[in-house]
Image 1 (cartoon, rainbow, N blue to C red):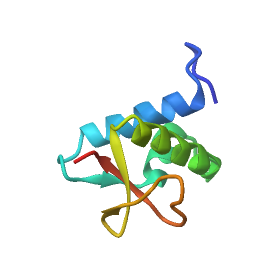
Image 2 (image 1 turned 90 degrees about the horizontal axis):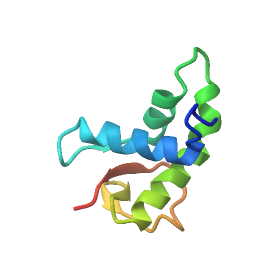
Image 3 (image 1 turned 120 degrees about the vertical axis):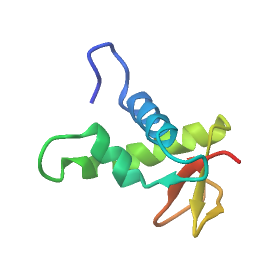
Image 4 (image 1 turned 180 degrees about the horizontal axis):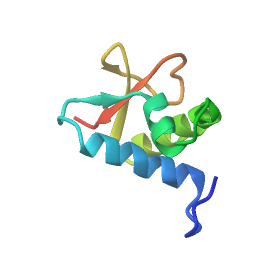
Length: 91
């Protein structure tokens, strides 16, 4: 899914992650499914195909030092995290 201005999907998802976090308390986190749903607004479950790209966007933002990926409220290595994750601002 590319936007009209040529932005690629991962960049769009990165922007959505940062936007959602920007509207939350500084210590809040977001779920990747929330990010995917915010980008894919059509009815149905088409947002599900964005789950792995959303995780990839979170990994890129983590490498850039902008977010942390957590499990059980604790930071985890984005390269090895499996299962449910959350995304929060870097502390």
